[in-house]
Image (cartoon, rainbow, N blue to C red; front, top):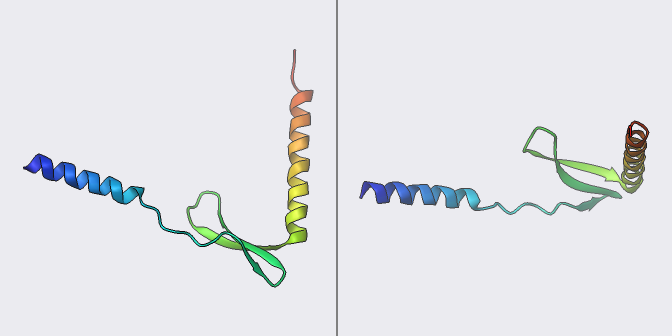
Amino acid sequence: MTRLYVVTVALLGLAACATTVPEEPDLAYEHGRVCNYERQTGSNMRVRVCRTQEEIDAARVDADRVLKEMDDSSIATTSE
């Protein structure tokens, strides 16, 4: 009987961990800005971040530039 109780409690505990809490929609538009929830590095807490479309485009261009520079530098340092 004790073994059955322990197994039942363990299974209920695992089932509780598997459930998810519905999250708010990630995108919202507010006064010409696009707002979404992002998890900060090293944290599970989500923070609401709002940016204009121009800021989003500039960040994307910067990220593409950095990736290209990293790719180019890895090619240059490869020894054969």
